Structures are given as structure tokens and as C-alpha cells.
Image 1 (cartoon, helix red, strand yellow):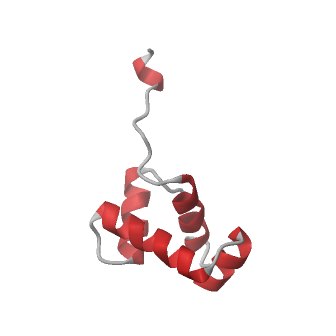
Image 2 (cartoon, rainbow, N blue to C red):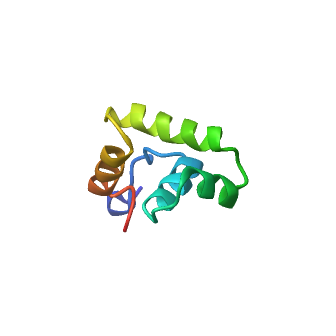
Length: 74
């Protein structure tokens, strides 16, 4: 295995990443739910799960941490 191409597993699931990519585009929970064809509750669950994984206190801190980690791009 070539170490220069190795990347550890991503912190986010595919769906969590999709939710947060839309969040950084200033989409509301309702808009994200409609775009991804999921319920608003499911969007909130993805956000909550990510906040717990990162050990932060809210959406804004989660976005900042994900940007810092290179998990999200603006």
C-alpha cells in the first residue's frame, strides 16, 4: 500500500456529509429534507449524530470542526 495515497476512514457517513454540505450552503432543515428526499426528523438525526461524534455543542461548531478537519469544503 502506498502511504501517500492512504487516507483514514472519513468521520462522516455519506448521508451526514450530504446534510452538512447543504447546511454550509445555508439551507434550512426543511430544504435539506426536500432535496435529499428524507424527513426533517432524519436531517436532525444526522446533525445530532455528527455533533455527538465530534464532541461539539451545536451545528455551527460542528461545521467549524469539519472544515478544520478537511471533511467539508466551502
